[in-house]
Image 1 (cartoon, rainbow, N blue to C red):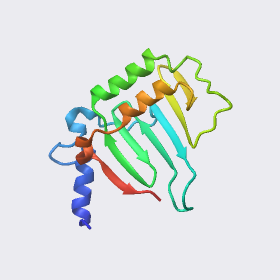
Image 2: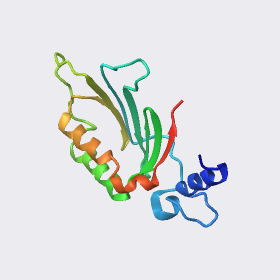
Image 3: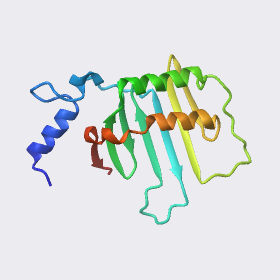
Length: 158
């Protein structure tokens, strides 16, 4: 276990609060903490093998690139500005904010997800598997590349 002083410095660096001006905020990833995510997903799957298993996850993406994932633990990381721009372009060009994403009511799945978009004055939710191809592409863009692990803060969920 790291001493509190070192843990604070690692946390401060990640969010740009260090005295030397380093960190993700100084690198252009945005220092402001936004209140409303542009994309929010709520996923669940099953059947859960045991009652203490985690069979759900929530992911929130903010325009600055801040990505918060909560499941068994909470991870806070940042996507690159280019990746965020690719996500915004995908949402706009695929018309996810307007088109009909109704899924087959007779389909039965062991995975469910709701994607909520707050962008360009729209506030819309899409339930998976509606618009499955677009939502799959979006999910892939929101996954962190392996080399971003150093800029991820992980804390146990309560």
